[in-house]
Image 1: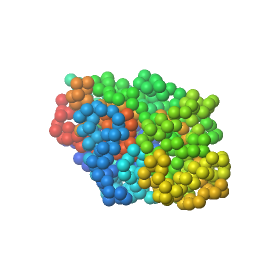
Image 2: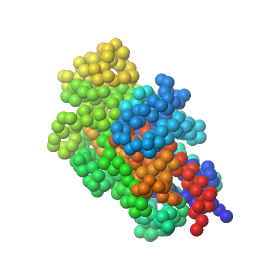
Image 3: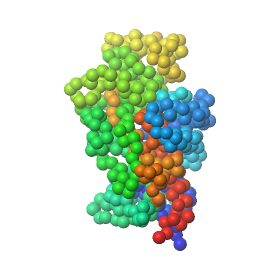
Image 4: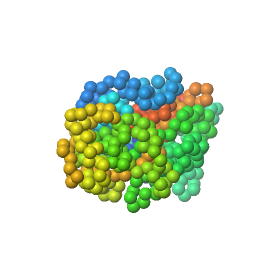
Length: 464
């Protein structure tokens, strides 16, 4: 008899990692994606994936240091349970990177130092291809090319309910693009993403963020499907505002912004307000955001939009060339000179060049600054500049899971036949997520969910 298939909801990296792991156990997979395109928000990720320690890091790191940074960043104490999730995330980070490198053939040897990290540990490739796109497209291609025909991808399929018998999840119902309703039986892994683009959910859980632009396409949250079968939600008020989304000069009032990834600052970019630096650009996202929003918004474009200059020199441009060339082509950044930035930035940039050259301490205590090509800036020195503002980017809250990726009830017991991975889950990041840990969370808990679901099927637990 052929093995029972598993159902994966969502085609971002968490869903793809789960599907990939299921296939290693010879378990057939039906993957349901509500959009016409695959990849979710994972495919947009620009900064990279965290891992420690790995052979690619320029500075010796450890799992303990990564764990401590993650705990410090989270700023929320959920007790021993959440600490187990952070431990599982950081303990498995090096193997997650190695899985992508060795099993999937993805080159991830360039390592950046992002905000909130003690050491550089955010990996991406040197080819210039954005890491989210490269990772997602590679894993998806491997799934599609599986010679056994075990992978069934169905797009434009919206899950409308989770089926449950005797408190055990037994499948889903979904609606196709033509309106046909389909019932599908099997254990379920939810990897359907967060609610940063769901206006109703944001209004319910974090009304203070009304008026902020977002990097997420508007789409309804899938969490009501999980609460309907008893899932416990955690941290729903914890919505991350990323400090830098590009303000398009052609359409500055658009509420949908393109992310200016942390990698641009990690590779040397600085932030200017009225021509002056005002924060350590490598602080955690919440601290950089607070430094920006401590002043009044810039009217009258949007209720909550600021005009901050993101400035890169030639060396930072060369380190991020494929990304910046894309932003240049879209008009989100421009090649300019210091003189074009106004009268104030020359002194600021001159001072930062000394910091980057290790000739002077940084007044904002920025550690491990990347060296700048500029040594003695003049008004005619070339820089690359874009205008940025804080944007709603990521939701840390969601369905609570344990370290085995099982979705938990209100009494903390697992819901049989149901797992979760990625942004749809809660409990891993607390009030603030470190850059580079979203792709990591997808790989770590997606693979765990795949393994656990496979063992569940092999045990015969789905048999009526």
